[in-house]
Image (cartoon, rainbow, N blue to C red; front, side, top):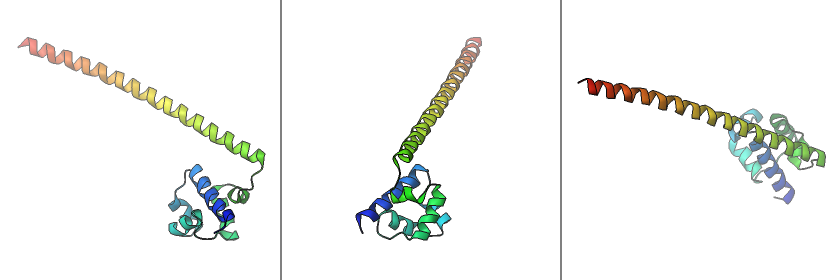
Amino acid sequence: MTDIEEDIGRNLRRTRISRRLTLEEVAHQAGISEAALSRIETSKQRLDVALLRKLAHILEVPASKILGEESPATQRENREMVMNTHRAERLQLHDRVNDLLETIELLQGELRKLSRNVDRKGSDR
């Protein structure tokens, strides 16, 4: 395969992964096998124009992104989108950690109460 076809396969894979889609999901929607999609992504099989358009639609990107013909403005927008996604994920993770810490504190309080009750019952005997 040519360098261009390798770039197309790499771009397709990067785009699919950035959209958090599996080979199985994209292949199913495109009406091809996972093996065929994998061969396209690894430049072992050529991508025809009809399938390119279908994959671009599934991935919600212009076909030019898969072809690697993005404008600098589009590249900036994509970087900003990725950064915003990472920022949102960090905030979600931070919130989840705080929720877990609160749960741990509640459980520790309950354990202290249980321990005191056990101590009281032991001293009553």
